[in-house]
Length: 468
Image (cartoon, rainbow, N blue to C red; front, side):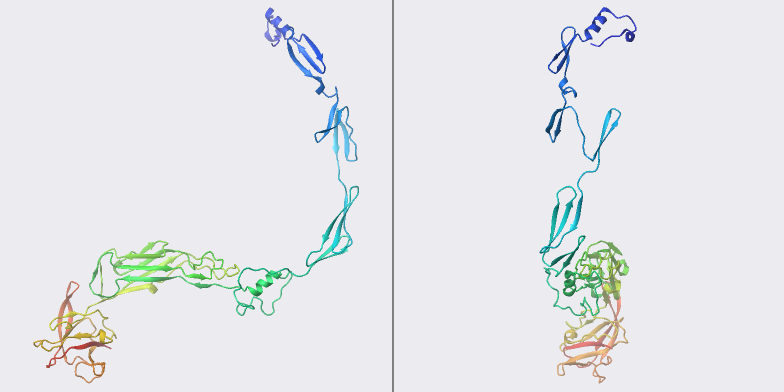
C-alpha cells in the first residue's frame, strides 16, 4: 500500500489513511546466513536479499575461459610492459598497448634441393619454412634477402582438338612468317604451339538472295485471258545467306530475318507489301486479272535486318556485319507473255484448229523441229478443200517471211512454195486473206489466213513458219 501524504492530499488524513501509512512501513528484519529478510507490521515477508552476490562481502571469482583461476579474489593487479593503469576519479582506467613477438625473416644456405626461410623470434620460438625444388625448377640463395627461382622446360602440350591441316601450314595459313620476332615477355609454349599448328582461318560469306520465286500461271497465255481472283500467285523463299564455317559467330546466317516482302505487278494485281519475318511468302491477285499482249511482268524484293558480326577461327571479328538492305526487284522478276494463238487444218480440212502457243514476232523461228511443226492433214479426198494457216495480224508482217515443209528424203525443212530462194521464201503458193476471230471472248481480232493455192492436192505435210 502506498503512503498518503498530507502535502499531496491537501487536507488532514483520516484514521484509515494514517493506519495505512503505518502498515506500509517495515516492521522488522532478520539475517539468515547471507540472506537479509524484511517483514511488515503483521510479520508478513515483504522482500529479501542475498548478500553473497554483492562484491566486497565475499570477494569475486577470477575466471579464464569459464575456468576459475582465483576464487573470491579481493583485488586485481595488472602487470606487464603493455599495461597502463591510470586513475579517473574513483574509476581505474586500464590500457593495453603493444603485444606479440618480433621476428626476423632471412633466406638460409641451400641444403640439397631446399632453401630455408628462417623466422628468428626476438622472444618466442624460432621456426623454419623450406622452399623445395620441383620438376624443372632450380632454387638459388643469392643473399639473405633474395632467392632466385629458375624454370627449365614448359610442361606437356595437351590438346583435344583435331588439327585442321598438316603441319607446317602453307600460305595463306603462315601464322609465323619470315622475319617474325617475339618481344618480351614472348610467347608461352602453349601459345607457340597454337601459332604453329592452328592458323587463323576465315569463314566464307555468302550474301542473301531470293530463291524458289514462282509465278503461277506463267509462260505463254492467250491475250485477253481473265484469271479469277486468287488464281494468280507469286511465291518466293528468302535465303539469309551464310557464314561458313560459323566458328563463334552468333548465327551462321549472313543477314538478319526478312521484315517486308515488296511486290510490283501490272494493274496492281498484288498487294504492294507484306510485313513478316517468315522466310517464305505467297501473294495472290485480289481481283480478276486480264492478260495483256506481250510481257506481263511480276516481281518481288525483300527488306531484311542487319546480320551478325562474323568471327574468325580464334574469335576475332572478321569483315563487318551485313547492313540491313533489300534485293533489287529486277533480279526476281517472273512473267506471263500474252499472245494470240495460230490456227491450222491439223485435224480436218475446213476446220481451224488452235495450235500450241508460240512467241509472236521478232527474230523467232516458229517450230524448231518436226515435233514443233504444224501437222497439216492431206487435201486428197477433201472435195477441193485446201490446207490453211491462220496467223494473227498483230504478228509483225515484216518478220513473217514464209513457210518451210519437212522433207522425208533430205530429213530437213525446205521451201514449201516451190521457190528456189533457199530455206526461207515468200508465200508464193499461199493466198493471204483478212479474217477476224473471237479470242478469250473478245471479238474482231484481226487474223491473216494463208491458204494453199496449188492446183494439185497436197498430201499431209509438216509446215513451220519462218521469222528472220
